[in-house]
Amino acid sequence: MHWTDTHCHLNHPDLYAEWQAVLFRAQQSGVHRFILIGYDLESSQRAVELAEGSDLLYAAVGIHPHDASRCSGDTLHHLRELAQHPCVVAIGEIGLDFYRDLSPRTVQHEAFHAQLQLAAELGLPVVIHCRDAYDELLEVLRDYPSVRGVLHCFSGTAEQAQRGLELGYHLGIGGVVTFKSAETLRSIVRTMPHDRLLLETDAPYLAPHPYRGKRNEPAYLPLIAQQVAALWQVSLDALAEQTERNVETLFRLQPLRKVPPTG
Ligand code: NI
Image (cartoon, rainbow, N blue to C red; front, top):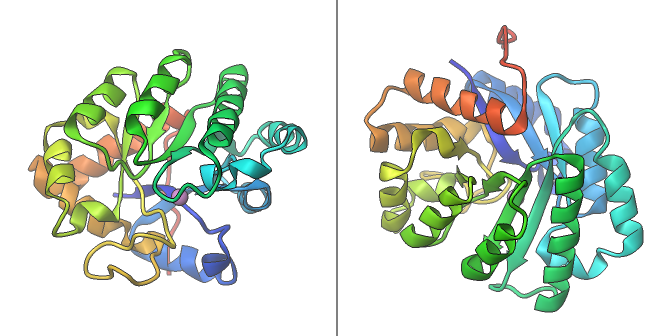
């Protein structure tokens, strides 16, 4: 049994300094494949550097809505170049964040559209970040019918989840599903189609229970998997098989033939 962490930030300063140790701990807990997600140009470059030449690490490149005001034509040009690397499997994380509003909303929209266009052009899926903006965001996604992707760390309502699924998107489920207060999310997960769920940690953020509030690591992914398996009433083996297939379908990865030995 092995897992893929579909959303982690080994490229983030909190993890980068000891990324090899972080990877080692993850492998010891059965997490063998990682998609490293960029959030600005520098972190996207770093994700590509880490992933290049590895068949267990992949990269997504993109400008987070917080940084949308730095998403100039020049930045997009660099992003387009980075996105051509064979280790890049998605554009992201991109989207809208009306909770923190760190970039003006019109600017967030512009950056989002530009990067969706890039994804459409390159035939890559997208990794979507959204907070307090699902209705607007889903309207935007409707304009890009050829693009598929994942609504990372999904935090919307059941109705918004339904609309996302109808548009062909996956839901990224992370540590929040283990929080006491997350009853809405658990009920969404319980009834959603099994072929649309991706497991993710979002490390170093959003550590699952009982590490809530601490620095998160991909090694904690199995804690999230246990919660999902309980909600679906399936075995961990069955869940791993399903979610690995989901990862391989969306990001067009080859199945892992042999899990490398750990320890
Ligand atoms: Ni993230």
